[in-house]
Amino acid sequence: MSPTRPAPQSESAPTPPVAERPGSLRLSLRVFLLLCGLSVLLFALITWQVLADGPLLGVDERVSHALVHPDRWSELLADLGNGQIAVPLLALVAVYVSWRGHTDGAGRWWLPPLAACVLMALVPAIIVPLKEWTGRHGTPVMPPGGDYYPSGHTATAAIAYGSATLLLLPWLRSALARLALLTLCAVLVLGVSFGLVRRGYHWPLDVVASWLLCGPLLLPLGLSYRSRRQSSSRTPRC
Image (cartoon, rainbow, N blue to C red):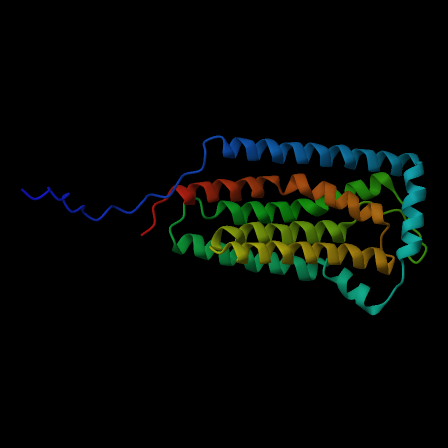
């Protein structure tokens, strides 16, 4: 009697995507909140030094004197932080993401673009009163005045380019494309920051303070991106 052959197995059903661990979103939230708390603490420290004319300002001025060298390239980099450039770019990305979300039937497709626009509108509402309150004078190459801390151009670049990046990331399937977009965002923000300091438009601490201020402002969009990534990983695809 011949040995019994195993019955042919039917085609296996497609393997559903592996969902992220339930605690991953909570862990991300804790990390985000920790980083935001650290940013707020450092911003408060720098602001206190500006108001009290503390020793940190001496270090800041020495670094500025070593870096300042006005040239055409530094001015072009600084101009990337102008509202006339950064804000229209964010508006175009917001319109594109809204169209994609509406076309694909994504839930609450309007919320991330709206949040990005609200963040952009908050920049002058936050930066201008801080400038008037601190009243820090400009670098030696700038006209006298007291409205240089924190840097408005840096904040504009960080919020506009950072928000545009966070809006586009969920629509990029390739990890390489997402990495390229994040790198481009970092290069733009750092380029604007370097140009402002190199050109003598701002002290280095003015720029650093804007970085620290914009991190917590971008938190809602960052959490929104994380949440959308988690939802998409649980959605079966053909």
